[in-house]
Image (cartoon, rainbow, N blue to C red; front, top):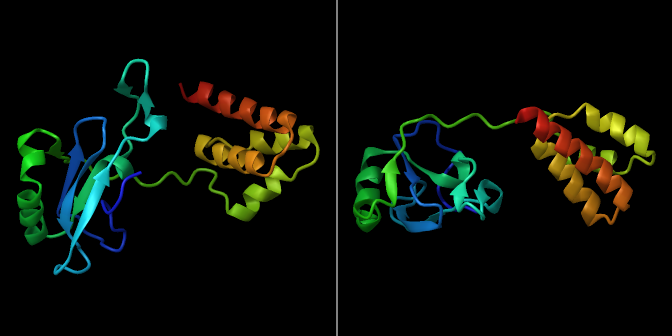
Length: 169
């Protein structure tokens, strides 16, 4: 999980930097909300985005792998504070825009719980057919597991996740 790399309260981004290696990269930055303080930051690739057999990143996740800088002064300080990371090739400038968050089939926690509580497996499967976001389906699965729902119910959810993943491949 990345930390102190994106501050949503800022509208304009001056520069972006991405980590190059798959392993965790950490350093220091000036706190964008209080320039008298320094804060540590980390960028890391989640296990879901990494194939352990091939030792390669399977997907790039902006929120985990990019740090945003908001002013020219902050950028100068960032480059100075992390000089070794740049000189060793662990950070590079990232010129693409952030992708908008995926709100496909976004559900509140209450809606996720409502779906998990559906008694009939047929009704559950019908409701899950309406969802096309793997992220949302994984939230439903995680909720079902944490609430100790039946293996059959979790299997129905897993089947839908697999069907959606197969459709997106």
